[in-house]
Length: 584
Image 1: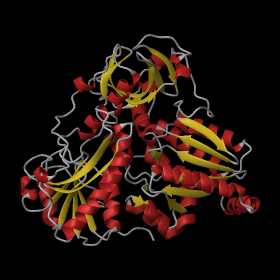
Image 2: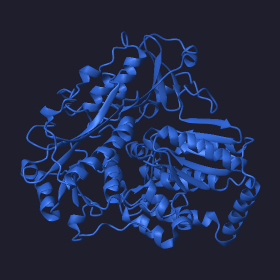
Image 3: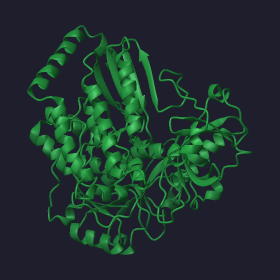
Image 4: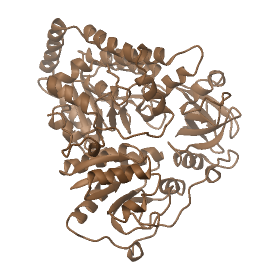
């Protein structure tokens, strides 16, 4: 079928549905929700059999839903209605939640039900639940609804759904999320911040400055015993975060966004707490997290061993990696290489493996008189390259990148620096840079990518700018294995496979072959030359006359509304009636 997506943005859920429906053989085109007239024009151009709205912030115009079947993906159980469905569920500590596919009509979230899928609601950030449980449920529910539509099945009126137990909920106001530091226990504080992560955040104060809070983590009794303080006091720092006391413990707060800045023209955006308040944070006692530590002790980097296998995780917020974070991770890789193990598994984070350079921190440099976005971009990409080089030259270990979460841009190529790349079945990869103002990219991609998919395959991947399902990445040779329907199953299987690799009878043969390949490749063309050629192009992106990268980064960080839909998504505007081609 011809399926048109109407979406506010091409977010992670929209991308998963995009690749899933294309994988079923449907012709899928995307129109970003800019104006009713633009959506109407898209419908007229594409003439879809079916319209799907994976993620919208406005109602579909009556001129469209009255003429076409429009499936709306609602992140709530049957009967739930309102724009803050998942927020309320997390704040109310629901044990079970779900996704419902509704047919658009005049009543918001009140249309007939095509499909629904429920799931246990994990205690976690809204953004994490949305990317995992909500997205997985949405894929299953949308595929079921599309199949029903294809065979002529009719949806069920909401009033006739005996299982409907949801209710109409208004937008969740800040007053409902307000933290009372003198009354709220740690679980309540976490639930409030979790329910607002990553949008809109919880309005509170840090160092007497009104701020929206994000990225909260529970503190352990061990760290709390080392610092005194009353409820509400900020008592310590770790990585970029601060520790704030509650009535029964404490929480780490990693990111914040001031309500306003001294410069009214300077719109504040989300940054690590230490970036917004460097002087205040520097005065706090530091409580660093050791690389090897108990599992419940929060920190960005963690290393553990199981026999001959070392596991290094790097759980950076939204997968973004700043200059300093790249440097710290490189030091951790060096530490892991010195350990008496044979295999090193790079786990990334639970939600993202990596998304490359830290655009928010780079944008912050553009607003500081003593810094520049170009300089910080340059420092960041060089730190990424240093990290990739550390992995590429780890000839003392076999290395594995285990993608528990999505990987994009430089983060996708960082994964390729390992000897083996294993992916979870639901992972998406975006192995390209052009969406960020035609960035050329580095991380030795000109060396790594052609080795896996060939020169022509590399060119196509870098040009088409579309997400890849893990199964498609496996098919074209970009990654080496895909397994695990559930995250826990993937994690367990990674351990089994890594252990088998470390204990294999031909381990030394494999390691010797790796060293020989590296030496041969270095003799043909040194890695330093690949790096110099890539960075020469990146230098023009950062410092050259074309401002495309800086404009795109500004729009991304400041969440600027879309002015038009990129043509690689809106194939109805290219004059093509065929699906965009993927690398093969």
